[in-house]
Amino acid sequence: MGEIPERIDCDVLVVGGGINGAGIARDAAGRGLRVLLCEKDDLAAHTSSASSKLIHGGLRYLEHREFGLVRKALIEREVLLRSAPHIMRPLRFVMPHDAGQRPAWLIRTGLFLYDRLARREFLPGSAGVDLRRHPAGAALQAEFTRGFEYSDGWVDDARLVVLAALDARERGALVLTRTTCGGVQRHPLHWSATLTGAAGETRRVSARCLVNATGPWAATFLQGALGTQPQPQLRLVKGSHIVVPRLFEHDFAYIFQHPDGRIVFAMPYERDFTLIGTTDADFRGNLDAVAIDDAETAYLCELANRYFRQPIGPADVVWSYAGVRPLVDDDGASAQAASRDFRLAHDTDGAPLLTVLGGKITTFRKLAEEAVDWIGPQLGNRHRGWTAQACLPGGDLFGAHPSNRSVLEFDQWAAAMQQRYRWLSPALVRRYARAYGARITVLLEGCRTLSDLGPEIVPGLYPAEADYLITHEWARSAADILWRRSKLGLHLPAGSAAKIDAWIAARGARVSAAAPRSGSAAPSYPSPSSRPPAPTSA
Image 1 (cartoon, rainbow, N blue to C red):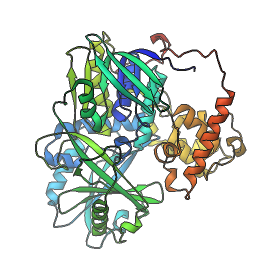
Image 2: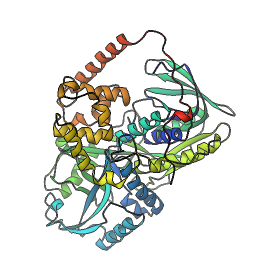
Image 3: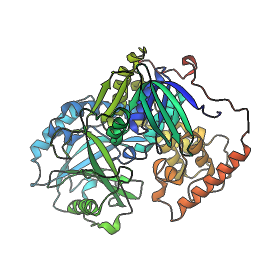
Image 4: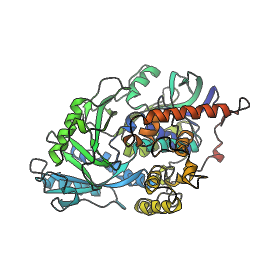
């Protein structure tokens, strides 16, 4: 593809490369709209890669009577699991119980409702368990003898964002990372803006509709664009997580009830670790420098020690992360009780403006669908939603359409990939299968032996994969590769990031030297007939 032109005309300018912005860009491009998505940093660089990594209905939201949100999320849970079975998987949760917590009958009632608020096709229902005999009981303090288990799902959150953006691009969208949007001006029929890239290059954009999907920055962006605040207003809540060496050997996750009423998860993570979180604290500070603090770390360790036999402390933390959730302000509820539902603020006082407020990863597809259901008619586009019946890139393990089989038979599919690529180690094939799904064939195209991947850059990372991530998935730095496109950073020795950055710089120099010096054609949006067709809604 040639150079991007200095002036770009599009139907929809989406500002913000988190899960909601990428989801909206994907849906809109699939309906034939000309879409431009810009993100000031890397895709999923902030809130969308700092979640609890769950596709879930939100059992605890039942306590706050958010039945509509829970039902919506439960419906989406299986839709999403089918759409990307490589980066998502069912996960069984165990909730230990003791006399000092919510009464057992209340928990049973909540789980009964959780099982029945939405149809389940393949996830098993809840059940009471005897922790003296259950595999999850061995890691717990002896006082916990009974509990409950139920189903939800796991997701690689950062890869979900990348795959949504990749699908958007393959349906005609233009995706620009490390590109800030400024100089926004509203006109009766269009918006104008200036995009500035990492090297200082600028482009002028004219868009018929503007989408503010900047997450925690939504109010700041709106203030800059229109001099107004979103209605309703946002409440910024920080959630932090810690990662420690593995505290148990089984594949169950735990949901713990703290005496202060908060809920914390402890989950198997990256084979060798346990992920514990999250906290909920109102946030006022620099959104570009969000980090866990000592009090949060101590709180999570204290809660884990209340349940697990093996004690942990701050010195055991091998990695931590924090993100700021932009929640709809509901006047005084505690941070943990504030609603996670989304709202879409519509503004037609001139060219259309849509501002995304709140939301959670589980409902991103539904949020995007509702957003484009509004945007489309504003621009004369009447195409129906299509994403409920579409796979994300790599999710088409057994055909183009989502299926329960892809979820239930993922291990068999991965075993078939091991037979196909017998020259790779089982651990590497498993990681590739989980990260890239059916697109493992694109990653390994032309490779017949391990040497075809190139000499290792760092343990487990070969040039073939790094090239794929740079070419197809917008990776530009070691941090992009080690912490968002993968979690290899947890497994590698000190100094690995510097080696990757040096390799990327050398690669860039080679590519620049080989690039043609003139005659590059500027890219244009594909005509609707040349885009991949969106599946027809059922």
